[in-house]
Length: 110
Image (cartoon, rainbow, N blue to C red; front, side, top):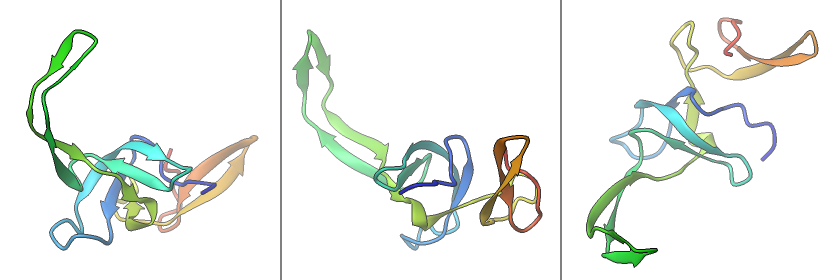
């Protein structure tokens, strides 16, 4: 996927997926543009049962580990920092730089 409009540190809202989590907002932790996935803090929590392992002289404790699983980028929508609503993102060129712009209020997102 080229031209990803969501970046690390943006606030996004979940638009589709699990019924319990639709409408939740969170901050983007990681963006994987080649795969088309984002990882959002506090959303899509999964549990993994971890065995005790020993690597390089350190031991990893066993137990149940919770982590945020990746979401497809089409399932989230950017929240405009100015108007606090979900909005589509456009681009404007100013002085040789490309700025992301909120389509609803017209204010720059960056």
